[in-house]
Amino acid sequence: MNSDFYVPPGGPPQVAPPSRDIYALMGEENIFRMLADFYAELANSPIRGMFPNDMERASRKSAMFFVGLLGGPPLYQQKYGSPMLRARHTPFPINEEAREIWVDCFERVLAEAPAKYNFP
Image 1 (cartoon, helix red, strand yellow):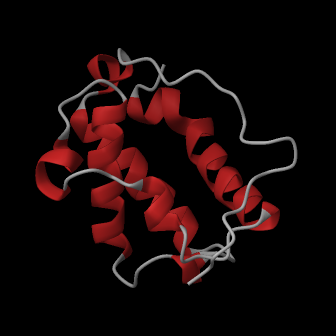
Image 2 (cartoon, helix red, strand yellow; image 1 turned 90 degrees about the vertical axis):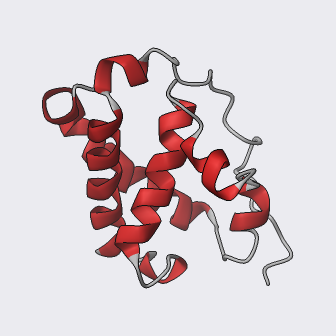
């Protein structure tokens, strides 16, 4: 288990939470599709080893979390309980390079998101 929890230089980024109206614009199906595409990017990335073998299941669990985060029903919490994000990430060697790879994968998906998933 990784006992050091990575914090970017200057501390965690201070950003506003996403608008809870996003769910109404995208809908559940598009959120699931977007997260499936994101996990496909992660599957082909240098940080693939940080994720479970079953990336399809992992993307569905993540999509359930994002549905609630973006204003939909709390699907993840209803099925799995509290997300406990810090505890779930502690075992992994997350550093600045890994963080940047993760963000790059997400940004590639977000580049197509307005047209592909009705992301605002």
